[in-house]
Image 1 (tube, rainbow, N blue to C red):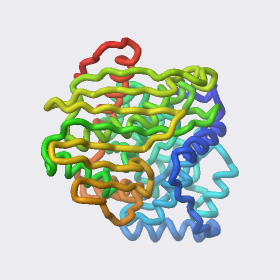
Image 2: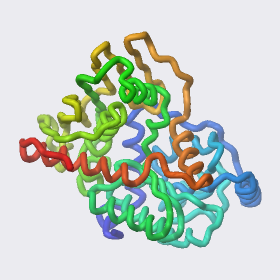
Image 3: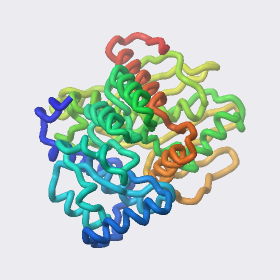
Image 4: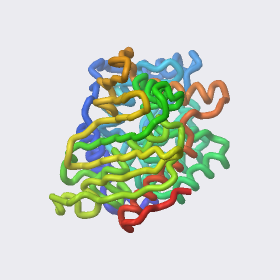
Length: 380
Protein backbone atom coordinates (compact mmCIF):
# COMPACT_ATOMS: atom_id res chain seq x y z
CA UNK A 1 0.00 0.00 0.00
CA UNK A 2 3.03 2.23 0.33
CA UNK A 3 2.78 2.64 -3.46
CA UNK A 4 0.05 5.25 -2.82
CA UNK A 5 2.83 7.70 -2.14
CA UNK A 6 4.33 7.21 -5.58
CA UNK A 7 1.39 9.12 -7.02
CA UNK A 8 1.62 12.17 -4.76
CA UNK A 9 3.74 13.29 -1.87
CA UNK A 10 2.36 12.94 1.65
CA UNK A 11 2.66 16.69 2.02
CA UNK A 12 0.44 17.27 -1.00
CA UNK A 13 -2.12 14.77 0.35
CA UNK A 14 -2.47 16.71 3.54
CA UNK A 15 -2.52 20.08 1.78
CA UNK A 16 -5.31 18.89 -0.52
CA UNK A 17 -7.16 17.36 2.42
CA UNK A 18 -7.21 20.75 4.10
CA UNK A 19 -8.47 22.56 1.01
CA UNK A 20 -11.29 20.04 0.52
CA UNK A 21 -12.39 20.23 4.13
CA UNK A 22 -12.63 24.01 4.03
CA UNK A 23 -15.07 23.75 1.13
CA UNK A 24 -17.62 21.79 3.16
CA UNK A 25 -18.55 24.92 5.16
CA UNK A 26 -19.28 25.67 8.79
CA UNK A 27 -15.76 25.03 10.03
CA UNK A 28 -14.96 26.29 13.52
CA UNK A 29 -11.25 27.22 13.62
CA UNK A 30 -9.58 26.83 16.99
CA UNK A 31 -8.33 30.13 18.38
CA UNK A 32 -7.19 29.11 21.85
CA UNK A 33 -3.50 28.92 21.00
CA UNK A 34 -1.18 28.03 23.85
CA UNK A 35 2.57 27.58 23.68
CA UNK A 36 3.98 24.50 25.45
CA UNK A 37 7.53 23.42 25.99
CA UNK A 38 8.63 19.79 26.13
CA UNK A 39 8.40 19.42 29.90
CA UNK A 40 4.94 20.98 30.17
CA UNK A 41 3.76 18.79 27.29
CA UNK A 42 4.86 15.65 29.12
CA UNK A 43 3.20 16.88 32.30
CA UNK A 44 -0.05 17.50 30.41
CA UNK A 45 -0.05 13.95 29.06
CA UNK A 46 0.68 12.56 32.52
CA UNK A 47 -2.24 14.44 34.07
CA UNK A 48 -4.66 13.42 31.31
CA UNK A 49 -3.75 9.75 31.67
CA UNK A 50 -3.98 9.94 35.46
CA UNK A 51 -7.54 11.26 35.13
CA UNK A 52 -8.56 8.10 33.30
CA UNK A 53 -8.80 9.57 29.82
CA UNK A 54 -7.63 7.66 26.75
CA UNK A 55 -5.02 9.14 24.44
CA UNK A 56 -5.79 9.69 20.75
CA UNK A 57 -3.24 10.14 17.98
CA UNK A 58 -4.42 11.84 14.78
CA UNK A 59 -2.95 10.45 11.56
CA UNK A 60 -2.97 13.14 8.87
CA UNK A 61 -3.13 16.81 9.87
CA UNK A 62 -5.34 18.22 7.14
CA UNK A 63 -8.21 20.64 7.43
CA UNK A 64 -10.57 18.26 9.23
CA UNK A 65 -8.00 17.18 11.80
CA UNK A 66 -6.86 20.75 12.42
CA UNK A 67 -10.18 22.54 12.09
CA UNK A 68 -12.43 20.05 13.86
CA UNK A 69 -10.89 17.04 15.58
CA UNK A 70 -8.04 18.69 17.47
CA UNK A 71 -10.25 21.52 18.80
CA UNK A 72 -12.90 18.95 19.74
CA UNK A 73 -10.31 17.07 21.78
CA UNK A 74 -9.98 20.14 24.01
CA UNK A 75 -13.67 19.64 24.92
CA UNK A 76 -13.78 15.87 25.43
CA UNK A 77 -14.31 14.14 28.77
CA UNK A 78 -13.10 10.61 28.03
CA UNK A 79 -10.19 11.15 25.65
CA UNK A 80 -7.52 13.70 24.73
CA UNK A 81 -5.01 14.54 22.02
CA UNK A 82 -1.92 12.51 22.88
CA UNK A 83 -0.03 12.29 19.59
CA UNK A 84 0.15 13.11 15.89
CA UNK A 85 1.40 11.53 12.69
CA UNK A 86 2.44 13.87 9.89
CA UNK A 87 4.91 14.05 7.04
CA UNK A 88 5.34 17.82 7.42
CA UNK A 89 7.94 18.95 10.00
CA UNK A 90 6.51 22.47 10.11
CA UNK A 91 3.10 21.12 11.10
CA UNK A 92 4.65 18.87 13.70
CA UNK A 93 6.34 21.82 15.35
CA UNK A 94 3.21 23.98 15.28
CA UNK A 95 1.01 21.25 16.77
CA UNK A 96 3.65 20.41 19.37
CA UNK A 97 3.59 23.97 20.68
CA UNK A 98 -0.13 24.55 20.30
CA UNK A 99 -1.40 21.36 21.91
CA UNK A 100 1.44 20.37 24.20
CA UNK A 101 2.50 17.22 22.37
CA UNK A 102 5.85 15.80 23.51
CA UNK A 103 8.39 15.01 20.78
CA UNK A 104 8.17 11.36 21.78
CA UNK A 105 4.50 11.34 20.69
CA UNK A 106 5.12 12.80 17.24
CA UNK A 107 5.57 10.37 14.34
CA UNK A 108 6.01 10.53 10.60
CA UNK A 109 4.82 7.89 8.16
CA UNK A 110 8.11 5.97 8.24
CA UNK A 111 8.18 5.76 12.04
CA UNK A 112 4.43 5.12 12.39
CA UNK A 113 4.74 1.48 13.47
CA UNK A 114 6.84 2.49 16.48
CA UNK A 115 3.64 3.86 17.99
CA UNK A 116 3.08 0.35 19.36
CA UNK A 117 5.65 1.12 22.07
CA UNK A 118 3.87 4.27 23.27
CA UNK A 119 1.52 3.72 26.26
CA UNK A 120 0.25 7.31 26.03
CA UNK A 121 -1.67 6.44 22.87
CA UNK A 122 -4.71 4.16 23.11
CA UNK A 123 -6.62 5.15 19.96
CA UNK A 124 -5.46 6.04 16.47
CA UNK A 125 -7.77 8.21 14.37
CA UNK A 126 -7.08 7.79 10.64
CA UNK A 127 -7.83 11.05 8.82
CA UNK A 128 -6.11 10.35 5.50
CA UNK A 129 -7.30 10.13 1.88
CA UNK A 130 -9.68 7.23 1.30
CA UNK A 131 -7.15 5.07 -0.52
CA UNK A 132 -4.93 5.06 2.56
CA UNK A 133 -7.55 4.12 5.16
CA UNK A 134 -7.06 0.36 4.90
CA UNK A 135 -3.28 0.51 5.20
CA UNK A 136 -3.22 2.67 8.31
CA UNK A 137 -6.14 1.00 10.06
CA UNK A 138 -4.46 -2.38 9.62
CA UNK A 139 -1.08 -1.03 10.77
CA UNK A 140 -2.72 0.66 13.76
CA UNK A 141 -4.39 -2.60 14.79
CA UNK A 142 -1.13 -4.48 14.37
CA UNK A 143 0.46 -1.88 16.65
CA UNK A 144 -2.08 -2.85 19.30
CA UNK A 145 -4.18 0.33 19.10
CA UNK A 146 -7.93 0.79 18.82
CA UNK A 147 -8.93 2.68 15.68
CA UNK A 148 -11.38 5.28 14.45
CA UNK A 149 -11.45 5.60 10.67
CA UNK A 150 -12.92 8.52 8.78
CA UNK A 151 -15.68 7.84 6.30
CA UNK A 152 -15.95 6.27 3.83
CA UNK A 153 -14.30 3.40 5.66
CA UNK A 154 -12.47 2.29 2.51
CA UNK A 155 -12.66 2.25 -1.28
CA UNK A 156 -13.68 -1.41 -1.64
CA UNK A 157 -15.59 -3.98 0.37
CA UNK A 158 -12.53 -6.22 0.26
CA UNK A 159 -10.50 -3.53 2.01
CA UNK A 160 -13.21 -3.22 4.66
CA UNK A 161 -13.08 -6.96 5.25
CA UNK A 162 -9.32 -6.84 5.73
CA UNK A 163 -9.61 -3.91 8.16
CA UNK A 164 -12.26 -5.66 10.25
CA UNK A 165 -10.27 -8.89 10.23
CA UNK A 166 -7.07 -7.13 11.33
CA UNK A 167 -8.83 -5.46 14.26
CA UNK A 168 -10.47 -8.71 15.33
CA UNK A 169 -7.16 -10.57 15.12
CA UNK A 170 -5.51 -7.93 17.30
CA UNK A 171 -8.53 -7.78 19.64
CA UNK A 172 -8.86 -4.06 18.96
CA UNK A 173 -12.06 -2.09 18.35
CA UNK A 174 -12.77 -0.32 15.08
CA UNK A 175 -15.15 2.63 14.75
CA UNK A 176 -16.11 4.90 11.85
CA UNK A 177 -16.30 8.69 12.12
CA UNK A 178 -20.03 9.15 11.59
CA UNK A 179 -20.38 12.35 13.62
CA UNK A 180 -24.05 13.01 12.86
CA UNK A 181 -25.18 10.08 15.01
CA UNK A 182 -24.28 12.37 17.91
CA UNK A 183 -26.06 15.50 16.65
CA UNK A 184 -29.40 16.27 18.38
CA UNK A 185 -31.11 17.33 15.14
CA UNK A 186 -30.27 14.03 13.49
CA UNK A 187 -31.17 12.12 16.62
CA UNK A 188 -34.59 13.80 16.42
CA UNK A 189 -34.96 12.73 12.78
CA UNK A 190 -34.13 9.17 13.88
CA UNK A 191 -36.77 9.34 16.63
CA UNK A 192 -39.47 10.73 14.35
CA UNK A 193 -38.76 8.20 11.62
CA UNK A 194 -38.06 5.02 13.53
CA UNK A 195 -40.90 5.56 16.01
CA UNK A 196 -43.28 6.68 13.24
CA UNK A 197 -44.32 9.72 15.26
CA UNK A 198 -46.09 11.19 12.22
CA UNK A 199 -47.10 7.88 10.71
CA UNK A 200 -45.38 5.68 8.18
CA UNK A 201 -42.75 7.27 5.98
CA UNK A 202 -43.84 7.56 2.34
CA UNK A 203 -40.83 9.17 0.66
CA UNK A 204 -37.47 10.65 1.60
CA UNK A 205 -34.98 12.88 -0.15
CA UNK A 206 -31.52 14.14 0.69
CA UNK A 207 -28.93 16.20 -1.10
CA UNK A 208 -25.40 17.25 -0.25
CA UNK A 209 -23.28 19.19 -2.72
CA UNK A 210 -20.65 21.90 -2.91
CA UNK A 211 -18.22 23.28 -5.46
CA UNK A 212 -14.94 21.36 -5.25
CA UNK A 213 -11.74 23.13 -6.19
CA UNK A 214 -9.77 21.80 -9.12
CA UNK A 215 -6.78 19.63 -8.26
CA UNK A 216 -7.74 18.35 -4.81
CA UNK A 217 -7.21 14.64 -4.09
CA UNK A 218 -10.97 14.09 -3.83
CA UNK A 219 -11.18 14.56 -7.62
CA UNK A 220 -8.65 11.76 -8.19
CA UNK A 221 -10.42 8.40 -8.39
CA UNK A 222 -7.25 6.56 -7.38
CA UNK A 223 -7.17 8.47 -4.11
CA UNK A 224 -10.90 8.91 -3.42
CA UNK A 225 -12.42 5.78 -4.97
CA UNK A 226 -15.03 7.92 -6.70
CA UNK A 227 -16.39 11.44 -6.69
CA UNK A 228 -18.89 13.29 -4.50
CA UNK A 229 -20.80 10.10 -3.68
CA UNK A 230 -17.86 8.85 -1.60
CA UNK A 231 -17.41 12.15 0.21
CA UNK A 232 -20.85 13.78 0.42
CA UNK A 233 -23.40 11.29 -0.84
CA UNK A 234 -22.48 8.91 1.95
CA UNK A 235 -24.18 11.33 4.39
CA UNK A 236 -27.43 10.89 2.45
CA UNK A 237 -27.00 7.10 2.37
CA UNK A 238 -26.48 7.10 6.12
CA UNK A 239 -29.51 9.33 6.71
CA UNK A 240 -31.84 7.07 4.72
CA UNK A 241 -30.77 4.16 6.90
CA UNK A 242 -30.86 5.79 10.33
CA UNK A 243 -34.07 7.76 9.83
CA UNK A 244 -35.97 4.64 8.79
CA UNK A 245 -33.96 2.16 10.85
CA UNK A 246 -33.90 0.03 7.70
CA UNK A 247 -31.56 -0.94 4.88
CA UNK A 248 -32.18 -0.44 1.15
CA UNK A 249 -33.40 -3.34 -0.98
CA UNK A 250 -32.41 -2.08 -4.43
CA UNK A 251 -31.07 0.99 -6.20
CA UNK A 252 -31.19 2.78 -9.54
CA UNK A 253 -28.84 5.67 -10.34
CA UNK A 254 -28.05 8.27 -12.97
CA UNK A 255 -24.83 10.20 -13.52
CA UNK A 256 -25.31 13.90 -14.14
CA UNK A 257 -23.88 15.81 -17.07
CA UNK A 258 -20.22 16.79 -16.87
CA UNK A 259 -20.08 20.51 -17.52
CA UNK A 260 -16.38 20.58 -16.62
CA UNK A 261 -14.85 17.36 -18.03
CA UNK A 262 -11.31 18.51 -17.29
CA UNK A 263 -11.99 18.95 -13.57
CA UNK A 264 -13.98 15.72 -13.39
CA UNK A 265 -11.78 13.61 -15.64
CA UNK A 266 -11.82 10.49 -13.45
CA UNK A 267 -14.89 10.91 -11.21
CA UNK A 268 -18.54 11.82 -11.55
CA UNK A 269 -19.44 15.50 -11.31
CA UNK A 270 -22.88 14.71 -9.93
CA UNK A 271 -25.07 11.70 -9.28
CA UNK A 272 -28.71 10.99 -8.44
CA UNK A 273 -29.91 7.68 -7.04
CA UNK A 274 -33.12 6.07 -5.85
CA UNK A 275 -33.22 3.54 -3.04
CA UNK A 276 -36.15 1.18 -2.63
CA UNK A 277 -36.53 0.72 1.12
CA UNK A 278 -38.67 -1.85 2.96
CA UNK A 279 -42.36 -0.97 3.20
CA UNK A 280 -42.41 0.68 -0.21
CA UNK A 281 -40.45 3.75 0.92
CA UNK A 282 -38.67 5.57 -1.91
CA UNK A 283 -35.53 7.52 -0.99
CA UNK A 284 -33.85 9.77 -3.56
CA UNK A 285 -30.35 11.11 -3.04
CA UNK A 286 -28.36 13.74 -4.89
CA UNK A 287 -24.72 14.71 -4.64
CA UNK A 288 -22.38 16.92 -6.63
CA UNK A 289 -19.02 18.67 -6.60
CA UNK A 290 -20.38 21.49 -8.77
CA UNK A 291 -23.58 22.53 -7.05
CA UNK A 292 -24.92 23.66 -3.68
CA UNK A 293 -27.32 21.55 -1.63
CA UNK A 294 -27.64 20.56 2.03
CA UNK A 295 -31.04 19.04 2.82
CA UNK A 296 -32.78 16.04 4.39
CA UNK A 297 -36.56 15.72 3.98
CA UNK A 298 -39.05 13.09 5.10
CA UNK A 299 -42.68 12.93 3.91
CA UNK A 300 -44.79 10.86 6.30
CA UNK A 301 -48.51 10.08 6.47
CA UNK A 302 -49.24 12.99 8.80
CA UNK A 303 -46.74 15.61 7.76
CA UNK A 304 -43.25 16.54 6.66
CA UNK A 305 -40.10 16.91 8.77
CA UNK A 306 -36.80 18.12 7.46
CA UNK A 307 -33.36 19.59 8.09
CA UNK A 308 -31.85 22.47 6.10
CA UNK A 309 -28.94 22.87 6.36
CA UNK A 310 -28.71 19.21 7.25
CA UNK A 311 -25.11 18.03 7.25
CA UNK A 312 -22.98 20.89 8.61
CA UNK A 313 -20.62 20.69 11.59
CA UNK A 314 -22.90 23.23 13.28
CA UNK A 315 -25.81 25.52 12.48
CA UNK A 316 -28.19 22.71 11.51
CA UNK A 317 -31.84 23.77 11.39
CA UNK A 318 -35.02 21.70 11.22
CA UNK A 319 -38.78 21.70 11.43
CA UNK A 320 -41.74 19.35 11.47
CA UNK A 321 -45.53 19.34 11.74
CA UNK A 322 -45.29 20.71 15.28
CA UNK A 323 -42.95 23.58 14.41
CA UNK A 324 -39.26 24.33 14.39
CA UNK A 325 -36.76 22.06 16.13
CA UNK A 326 -34.73 23.67 18.88
CA UNK A 327 -31.72 21.92 20.40
CA UNK A 328 -28.59 23.19 22.11
CA UNK A 329 -25.41 23.44 20.06
CA UNK A 330 -23.05 20.50 20.50
CA UNK A 331 -19.60 19.58 19.29
CA UNK A 332 -20.38 16.58 17.10
CA UNK A 333 -16.78 15.41 16.93
CA UNK A 334 -16.23 15.67 20.69
CA UNK A 335 -19.34 13.59 21.32
CA UNK A 336 -18.30 11.06 18.68
CA UNK A 337 -14.79 10.55 20.09
CA UNK A 338 -16.00 10.53 23.69
CA UNK A 339 -18.54 7.85 22.84
CA UNK A 340 -15.88 5.64 21.22
CA UNK A 341 -13.54 6.10 24.18
CA UNK A 342 -16.36 5.28 26.60
CA UNK A 343 -17.02 2.01 24.79
CA UNK A 344 -13.39 1.06 25.45
CA UNK A 345 -13.51 2.13 29.08
CA UNK A 346 -16.75 0.22 29.73
CA UNK A 347 -15.82 -2.64 27.38
CA UNK A 348 -19.14 -2.20 25.61
CA UNK A 349 -20.01 -2.48 21.89
CA UNK A 350 -18.95 0.37 19.61
CA UNK A 351 -22.00 2.35 18.46
CA UNK A 352 -20.62 2.98 14.95
CA UNK A 353 -18.49 -0.09 14.21
CA UNK A 354 -16.46 -1.15 11.20
CA UNK A 355 -19.32 -3.41 10.13
CA UNK A 356 -21.48 -0.32 9.60
CA UNK A 357 -18.72 1.28 7.55
CA UNK A 358 -18.48 -1.88 5.45
CA UNK A 359 -22.26 -1.91 4.95
CA UNK A 360 -22.15 1.60 3.56
CA UNK A 361 -19.32 0.79 1.15
CA UNK A 362 -21.55 -2.04 -0.17
CA UNK A 363 -24.27 0.56 -0.80
CA UNK A 364 -21.88 3.02 -2.45
CA UNK A 365 -20.60 0.33 -4.80
CA UNK A 366 -24.17 -0.73 -5.62
CA UNK A 367 -25.01 2.87 -6.54
CA UNK A 368 -22.00 3.06 -8.84
CA UNK A 369 -22.94 -0.28 -10.41
CA UNK A 370 -26.46 0.98 -11.06
CA UNK A 371 -25.08 4.23 -12.49
CA UNK A 372 -22.76 2.43 -14.90
CA UNK A 373 -25.24 -0.25 -15.98
CA UNK A 374 -28.42 1.80 -16.14
CA UNK A 375 -30.15 -1.13 -14.46
CA UNK A 376 -31.75 -1.70 -11.08
CA UNK A 377 -29.28 -3.35 -8.72
CA UNK A 378 -30.45 -5.59 -5.91
CA UNK A 379 -28.62 -5.02 -2.64
CA UNK A 380 -27.73 -8.06 -0.58
